[in-house]
Image (tube, rainbow, N blue to C red; front, side, top):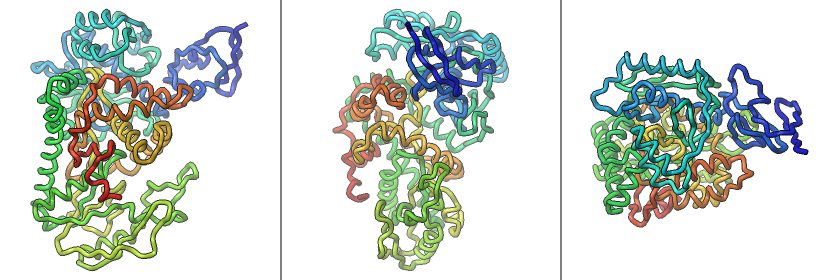
Length: 550
């Protein structure tokens, strides 16, 4: 006799047939977006057929928000399909952690009339509570459907799909796939804000870091300009989709393609060097910060060389030197030492040293080594007048760190990869996923750390970013886009084996499997042509700066 035991909300259910998790939750308010079954992320319609403990996930969970955001993109695409089936609509990630909607038809105005119509259609679909039903098509039938419905971007992507079948979600007569889990029906998507922003639409949705609420929109004009430039460059080089980029890899000389990307980085460094040189009489601190795996170390080295070429010889200091001894590190809410808290740094000593160096005095910079703490004797250091100091670290943009240095003497740089490449026009590549893949590759190579270990640490890393980095990104003088369009074609070789080591019974298998499926769409690119000073070398090895930073 078929009999399984399911524990949910501390209640035990004995089942004698396969039962969707949603039936046991009885969530009339549609509060929950997904479930964890024995610590594995599943959709609400997942059928329970083995002994398990089920945890419903609301919008305070990062996993649930990902499911909600994926479903929201489907809803937006569906609304445009119903109203304007001949328009190509691109969905990407915008400022203030939102979805950016762009109609690619050049003469179509995204005005208040279109906004009102699309929003009304989305609200109609939500009120109708139409189910998202899973279905399967052969690769050939999927290609025909995409071509018949003017979704050539999706048809192009299929040629790089190795599987012979394609999974879809059906809503009415509309088919689409968003490369992620979905909520059961349109009725779950009742929380969103939508408005016009710079000839586009912004769609906000609940965020886990805002306790499941839609956060107040934060205009980020500096970041918006960077994303706009990245989008323009991707279109100009015809690499705004994976399929287009793969064609470029196949048809273009690898050296040309790689160096085309590297030249973009060189150009940004040249522009940045000019901005600093123009105000060098005032600038004393060059402050560099960005989220994990943004490429800060290589960037700061290359910026130093760029400035040296202009007759400026900066001193480069890592904030890691100013960590307090382990017994003085603050404790976080989980009872662990919080090395990302600003109070983990000796802020008083840092300011004393910066003031003394700027004044032309000699100081002993701390010699801090993780695991051993601070050495007894420091490193005697003195710099000539008007020499800027490059500081790089998590708190570099926070004025509380350098509170004794006048603001006009600080030049702040925020660095992060800001991709404007999509799988297809409805499925953007997550900036966070790019950094996660970089970190998985780097941790495996340099720290002998498994992908599972990196995935386990990632939520803690993200909490630190939201608390100590993102609040200060918009107050900077320059945003450096550290993305390299070709990098996933190179990272794939290292990331795939690491991710494939994650076992099916691991709580991180769903994430690992999602990243594996995503990476498989990229063509391989030989790393031998990647320059030794490339930011990518920080993660795959072979950097000419490696010994400098040891």
